[in-house]
Image (cartoon, rainbow, N blue to C red; front, side):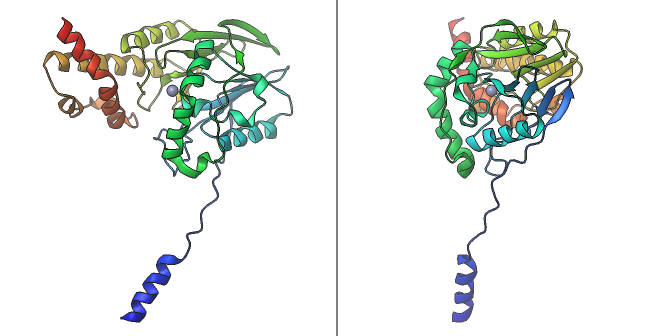
Length: 307
Ligand SMILES: [Zn+2]
């Protein structure tokens, strides 16, 4: 008996050999000079190291444009070496598309003098960046080691930018996070809506100015004659199916919250409502629906009360 106990103690105390924390990023060439790095459609976890975001880069004649830097210093470094394995052109511009941590916490891997965002995004990162980083440490742990917030030094002005043979149009929207950059590359026909569009992965709402606002900006994106669209989360598409899913989900969410508030339902009751089967292919639909109820339902209740 005593030996058995001893054996058990010995077994338990054998150190667990940790797997190296490597993202193993790979880039897919999706159009002329355009590379796409697709993340998982999962929630942040230690298992995925927060690799749940899409990033991309364009290799122009003048140099590389990097579109988002990922969730951690380690991700940024992996992205940097991936770019270096494809081109030795200088990195001319590194863009943070909005304030969310999975889009800018890899900034340290790049020259800070070329990191840019919309002006309002820069203010948001300055204000919220540390809190976001702390939260990421809590969610993915050791993957974040050494990660610090680097606030973008440059401001991107909405409008046209000619760069190394590419005509890049920067568009400022607000629906997802209050300040959301969209890029349309007129040269290749690639549309980068970033987190304005989630596809096959439920959208997140902690900083939306309102579902109607977001929905009307999705209508705006429909006017762009893109050939391929690379969402911020989820797979690429060559047609309007991602926009259709966004409009459909935003409408359903808005109507559900509105009618629930009118019926006087509690937050818990709303969370228990069924999600229509047509969203059955959307990852994290239940978890994000519940989070959206927490974020948004109080305002819908106030609107009914004021009525
Ligand atoms: Zn986001």
